[in-house]
Image (tube, rainbow, N blue to C red; front, side, top):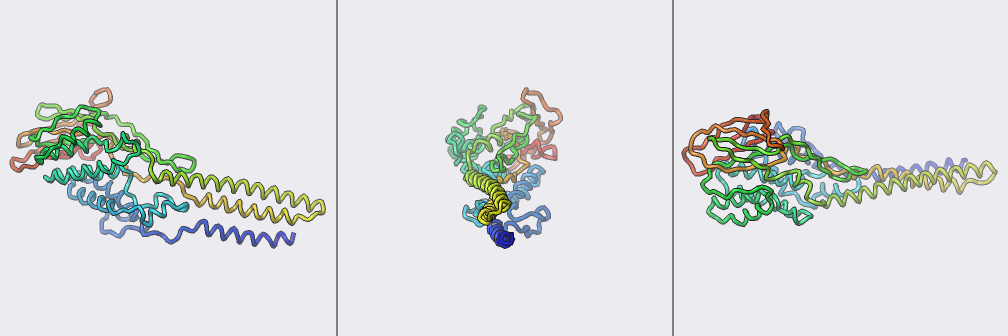
Amino acid sequence: MSRLRFIWPRALLLVAALVSLAGCVGPALPTDQLLVTNDPKLAGTVVRDKVLWQYRLGLAALRAGEYDEAKQRFDDAILTMGGILADREDAKRARSLWSGEERKTFIGEPYERVMAYYYRAILYWRDGEPDNARACFRSGQLLDSVAEEGDYRADYVLLDYLDGLASAKLAADGSDAFARAEKSAKHKLPAYEKNDNVLVFAEWGRGPLKFADGEYGEKLRFGEPQSAAASARLLVDGRTAALAPWDDLYFQATTRGGRVMDYILGNKAVFKGTADTVGDLSLIGAAIAHSEAERKRAEGESGRGSDQTALALAAIGAFGKILSAATVARADVRAWDNLPRYLGFTALRLRAGDHAAKIEYLDADGRVLEAHTREFTIHVPAEGDRDTVVFLSELAKNPAGG
């Protein structure tokens, strides 16, 4: 037994060393630090979550009619998004066994990045810059062009349709963009009318939610929030304009196919499970070897060999369990959580002046959801050649935005 007492401390030192090796994640990354900012709305935000909060705050500002703030938020987010490189240190760390995907600087899944460009395009058009709006629509569609399945590449209806509309208003040919939009559309698209001077962007329903699935949370999945509103319509000057759901963000989130990170997380999960199994089997073997050593000693034999085997297996088992516990395979479920589900659009020609208008949201059976109905005024300036842009959101705290 004196020999056993001598071996155990050495084994524990070995296990301690292995624990230190397995748990070593290095110094904290700059992305783990709090953001240094004078912006009270970003106070307490870690650097890696800055873009996420710019997305959320930008959309909240747009819905509240605070357009200057919305532009600043989306410009900052898009600038950061464009500067993210695949070989950044935080991205490398996220691919390692010992660090989670959420340690990366957040730029979002493709549908989230697309929406940043979509909202910025609306703001550009509102400022009388359809050329810059068109560039944003094209950038958004480009982000969606690398889906795993070819049928789902660059299939946002509105991005192509509005690309073509901007071209038509700029005296260019928008027919190719219209044809692409028509190919993806589930509803009949209206032909371009260059004289339409009021553009109405609408959104309703709540966007997709992210959650982690799989034994170790290694699979990124999307929840489908139920929306009471299935479509909408605009009533102005005795006319009714349908607002069909041209795009569905839940559909966009779930038709991208596999991510590179999915394969990395899958491999992490396999490693984590294997290490855990090896740990269990080794610890069981250690217990069996220890029992064998005790039996031999009870019969007057030397149990030294079995003791050494038990200690070796115990060390391997402990290391396996430590490796398994230290391996982080969970998918990143940070999400731009105030996005809508459906996007609608219509264009009108209205004379200069104020126009009483109303938007009604309808359920799947075409019944008006009275509690969701909003009345507002569309003001068309008497002078100027820019379009009047109206943004309406069922999710806005204010009744409507123009």
